[in-house]
Image (cartoon, rainbow, N blue to C red):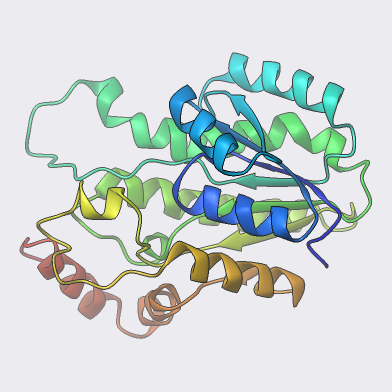
Length: 254
């Protein structure tokens, strides 16, 4: 599958991995649409890349997703690629008292969002030849980082859902790809986890995106660049050892 001359919708595309992907896809003669919740970030992204089409939308809100669906298909009926990228990752201590809704935020955005987006856009995508759904999970879907328990749980669930979605869509013409990034050099990596990740190397988002595009074009259905592939392999070979390593990185006892 060639990622050129496509119409692509990327959730959470105003910064980080989503924005890096949007820029590289624009350079490959695609029509690129991005969503985000922060209008200032969307404006900045559009100013930096004037060809970008931006939509303020919350990927965890069913009403917002329905409204986005109506507007996107009215303006871009040739939409044939959906990238479920929107997500948050938090340093979350489960020993502290938290409101239930706060604990569920990563489930709402990282899991509920992609499921709702897929369900909303799938009938249209099934009418498009060569349609593609990309679910962005994480290397932490295979081995959790105990420091971020709800994020890892949501990404593991999204990995499982993606496997099932791929099976159910066989024969429809819709390809389902999972992109599982390793730690990536984004503002979140150096703020929310500044103390724990000090000295840790992360992948440049532009490098990650190049690997993702190359993987999709070569027909790979599960793309695990760098350390993400190590986590997948070690989750099978030595899961207890790997969990211990991740716990030590979190400065927690395994």
